[in-house]
Image (cartoon, rainbow, N blue to C red; front, side):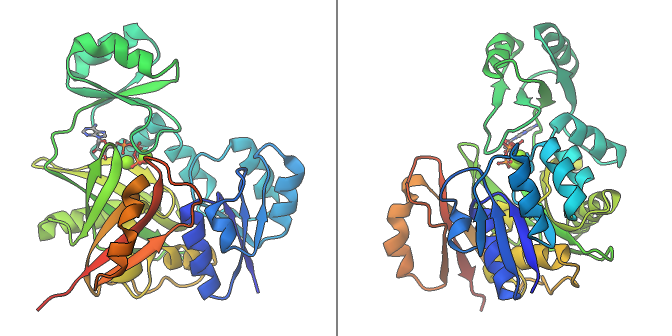
Length: 350
Ligand code: ATP
Ligand code: MG
Ligand code: MG
């Protein structure tokens, strides 16, 4: 059988491995850190750094296709890997989404709405950006941010200096604060043949910058639902994308505003594991393996809740509940703020 290579051994890589195994594939994880969660379920693990050229080459030669669970893969590693093996989703999706500035320019180029933004290189450019965009605003590092890390909020222009200091010299972007009523995301998939399928949009609530719950269905009018799905398809088509992507949206009276895109399976898509015949992980594996996309129709309403850090203490109680499906990541050490697992509560109707 074919082997799927996965860059990154976290919980997303783990759940991709499980989905791949169900379809009869073998998986090979490439991960610099020791004892990755995906290593417990994959067929092979390579523990090596992204600048280890021999390890990258051996990995690429041992697999039939390479995919990834995170977007910050170093460019040099990709240059080396792609000589030996196809990488899906492709390089363009990574290039665009690795940098918030590139990403916003790309989205605006498609005619989509984003928060107003400006490139920040020093205090002077920050002051002129504040003059233009106003406050409240959010300063974010252009690269490597996740779970709200690398962000500083500016309530007034007087916050400029401390916010810039928080960026620790990293290239940054100032975003105008979007006055949204709620946040939704579309988990969209595109096959090798260009077929696009979107899961039902979910409504996301964050706590301390980390996703807390995703509720399906989201509060959206039929027109907003259509907009959300069409704009996601627009993004995937523009990138000639193959695989699953998470598209985060702000809902406002002025329409849907794209917050960011993630070229991979997404935490806000975990509900699909218990709400659809084919979940986001299987859909991603199908796409990168060149299969037809599966049936992602929602058969149940679901509330997904993340188990962060010591939320793990709730597991014995959750395990006794009806209509609760637990998904735990097998991480050895519980740490505050660490994603340890999630559960899907199936909402039965009638
Ligand atoms: P993720 O873990 O989703 O990758 P991230 O660290 O990349 O998160 P963002 O998604 O950019 O961060 O921001 C995190 C949250 O902060 C958003 O979901 C939203 O609630 C809020 N936020 C971010 N940018 C804005 C904005 N311009 N206006 C209003 N709220 C915002
Ligand atoms: Mg992000
Ligand atoms: Mg986000």
